[in-house]
Image 1 (cartoon, rainbow, N blue to C red):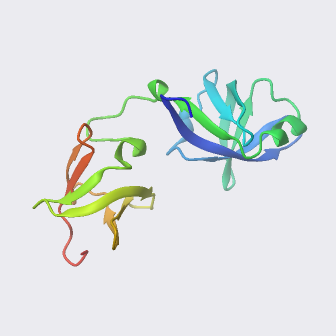
Image 2: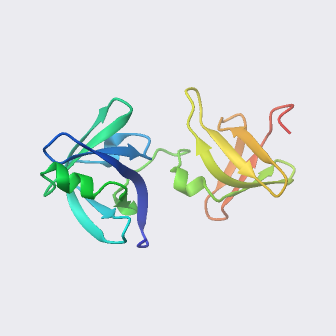
Length: 169
């Protein structure tokens, strides 16, 4: 995929007869799908097109997305399986101490005494706090993403230090 773009979702079905798409969003909220902004859609066959967003809204277990120029059910069905990308420069600014998941995934994770735990491979969103899934050759460790656990994050070095709760390892 093009450099500078971020995968934010996937089209999973058509909705209705007016060309709306059901999507599975990878974003924490629908605010990244701003009306009037552009989105890059990469089809399973490898074609890429830019569309303008009309609107996006939550619907049952998926979200709905309306795109300018996609006005029939058959056009929406042709996009099923396509991945949705936005340019990273269009992401909203975050408060200090907040990070986008794409910044954290791939980081090397160490304890406060520099014991290597593994690489942060994915993040699970739970009701109370996120959970960092850290893997190494032998283990998978689930680390709660809490201020009391995450000691430091260095984006430039792609390194995180944690203070593991007793009994976690």
